[in-house]
Each structure stands twice: as structure tokens, then as C-alpha cells.
Image (tube, rainbow, N blue to C red; front, top):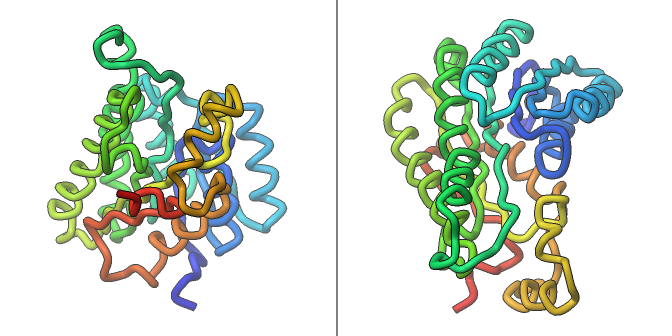
Amino acid sequence: MSFTLEGRRALVTGASRGIGRAMALAFADAGADVALLARDEGLLAEVAAEVADRGRVAVVSAADVLDAESVRSAVEASAEALGGLDILVNNAGGNSFSIPLGQMRMSGWEKTMRLNLDSVVHITQAALPALSDGGGSIINVASVAGLRGAPTMSHYGAAKAALISLTQSLAIEVAWARIRVNALVPGWIDTDLTGFLRVSDEVEQGVLSRVPMQRWGRAEEIAEPAVFLASDAASFMTGQVLVVDGGLSAMP
């Protein structure tokens, strides 16, 4: 029963598809009410209907995580609608290009940092007052690219490495308030956001050749570890990095 989220209230960013959608549904299956935040209100409504089918409350908040003021308003409205927050999942992020650093435009670097790092700071600052009322769990979704060299994706790897560092620092800062902060690190997961790595068989095989399990991960295989981190089963776990990557990070 330690894995139950019965009576908990979760906010998931990037919840309209992929890993975020899978997490929102897994939380609902575990008993949580869920606030869903992403840009596409139509897709969010579809996820909300699936949450409702599971007998849980769903709150839709359409906002662009790159817009700090919009995000702050959305987080505050979500917390008010649910009567507080117990779980925050900073899942929104991603990368849409691959290029050597020497050829990268600074606009691409800056947008990647804003999407994967700055947005997490804005969202977390907005959510902390609601979480500090009764403790809870913050889960920052990083990437295996942040654990080791990521040639031609240095921008993304740097952002996710910084997110892991932020996770550990914040965990120490808020432990007194009974808020746990951990990073969940997926490997290569089969979602729309990794579509650029499947542009050809050659590129795809190059990616999977480094994965000992020789396959893409599924979004649901990240959602279940997220339930663990959000639940009392992880009650003495904070400032940690949980890697779910098919063995990629174990490769020499």
C-alpha cells in the first residue's frame, strides 16, 4: 500500500502526450487527482477525460512553459482548483535538433535552456507555497544526456545536467518542509519528441546500438517509477537520480 497515491493532488507539466500523459494516467490509477499543464488545450481535454474515466478529478491548465507569467498563473489556479498540491512533476521539456556546438546558433542554445531549465525554476517557485503546506514530492524529468557526453546535443545535455544539479540543491533547501526532490532520468523513449532520432534506419540503429536492451523504452516504463517517487514507498529518498534507460548509462 506504500505505492498508493490515494487522496494526493498532482500537477504534471507536458501532460498532453508522451511521458507526461503516461504519468498523469498512472497517477490517476494510483488514486491521485491530477492537474494537467501543457500548451494544447484540446489534447489536454482528451487526457482529462481519461483521468475522469478512472474516477479521479482532472484540471486542465493550458499554458506555455516558456511564458513565466502564464505558467505562474496556471500553477496557482491548478493548486486552488485541487485544494493544494502534494506532487509536482516537471516533465515539460525536450530537444528538436542535433548539431555540433561549433555550428549551433545561440538562439537554439538559449531556447533549449529556457525550455528545459528556466521553465522548471518558474514552475517550482510557483508551486512551492502549495507544496510547503503539507510536504510532498517534486519529480524533475531529466535525461540520460545529462549524465554523460552527448555529442551534437551538447545544448540538451547541458540543460539536463544543470537540472540534475538543481534537483540536488533544492532537495537540501526544502527537506525541512518535508518536500522531497528527485530526478527521474529516462533513456531513449519512443515518443513524438524523439522522432528526430528515427529519421532513418541508420540514425535509429546508431541510437539503439548504445542501448544494451536494444530497444526504445515505453512512456509507461517511466510513469511507474514516477509513481514510486511520488509515493510513500520513496519516503526517505530525496536529492537522488533514478535512471531508467535500458542500461545505456552503464555502457563504457
